[in-house]
Length: 431
Image (cartoon, rainbow, N blue to C red; front, side, top):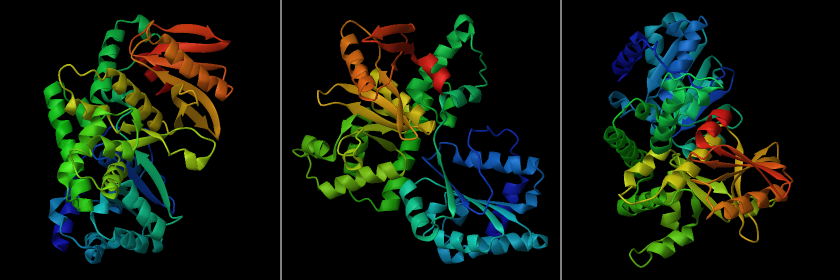
């Protein structure tokens, strides 16, 4: 095993990473362990490569950097009590570094049982700058809470934001793009991002069919590797039903009880099992819950809305005649808010007037956002009524309605300023 590890170390160090796309995230190399947590294929590995490249540009000797990907099948059988072989193999290759600070990067480390004990031991030696990545927030959080409390700096990683998507496409723009011929390409990219999301690999593929094939592979990897194998799932059929239900009902209010009630006549469902399966999908970053706003903490999760990690997954269960553009739009706005690290809720008052998103900063509500496919005579009163209810509740003077492609418009309703803006403009302004 040690010889395999040496080959892996040297193979990686011989690779060139000159064309790695830089994200907005960055690591800090203090005493704390960097933990990078996010859904699979969101770009965590290449982010690590970009951080390593930055270190070498700052003058760090490449021999002082050790990278191991625990998804590598050559070390898939390694046990926790053999993890020290990695450090031994490294110092046998570079004995001259024995008394120097070493930068350690361990990718998808949650694949190894009791990994946290190994990291804790390295941390306590005070000579390693440690960065770890993983695809399960709960697994990492649980181990961190028990063994690494106060010793980590967590970074939550997501697929590309729209601005990163444009940079990934090497598309440049200025504030006057709406008057330029480049606006046509921009609208095309907005539609692509809306329908197929921000996974980096997907952004490089032009064929819609190929995008769907890759997204299906990603979903299968999440189902089988991150959920079924890791949590020893027995009722795979139920798990797949839950996933199809989630993808068909994103951007809507949700409860476990409503799901069970819907399917109880067709399947014998155990409430604890159903709850656990939904929890596992949240752990691996596949779904996110949005709480309904309440000043009472315990009431925030009594009702919640459900969103998926990336719009592309929704395409896997779209059939001819299905209308999902409104849900895709709302899901996209949610994920963009999530990527910007803003605290978000949805609002509904006692009259069931609803506003899709209210945004909080420093414990103060600063923005209210309504999302709808388009504004028409049929829905205008409902959408404005929900937004006004939120503005009045939080003493805000103005709010926003985001649509797919309506022309920008300013309205005054009950002395409140309402901005109706198309998605492309919101993404460039707020992303």
